[in-house]
Image (cartoon, rainbow, N blue to C red; front, side, top):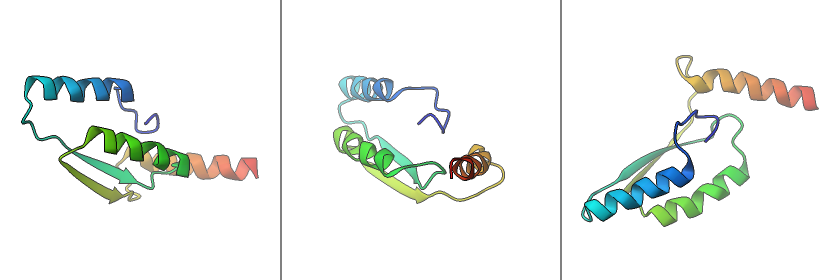
Length: 88
């Protein structure tokens, strides 16, 4: 989540989710996820699975990362590839 520059933590997302459900029990909460963000590891994916299960979103859309020049992640891809080369 750090790479996406979200202004909210996982703990805050969980608290917000439960607060909304307490106020409006019949609320429908969907979410969208992007898979394959530069630098994403298998550990990141494994951490996400229990979060999705716990939240019980009403609808989940999963999209493949697309290298678009107008996005923040566009610069990340260069950063992660350069860092990999420097470590090797």
